[in-house]
Length: 59
Image (cartoon, rainbow, N blue to C red; front, side, top):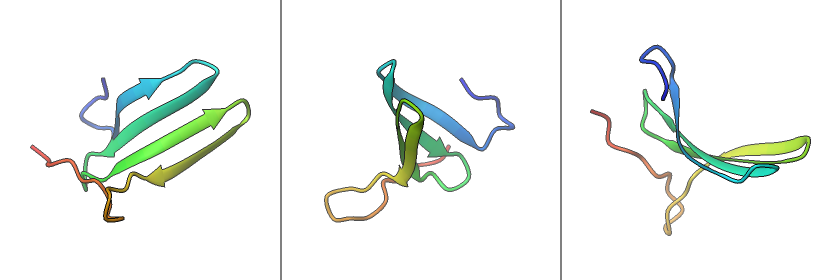
């Protein structure tokens, strides 16, 4: 669990060597997908079916 001072919170993780994670920006609510395999990885906004960013409501 992220501390209140950290901007991003990891809300989902899957895998060990090849990992997929979902991170939420605590300031904007935008969700991001991070995928890594070996020494390579990438981060991109998570998009819905209409191509718009998935936004988690902030509390």
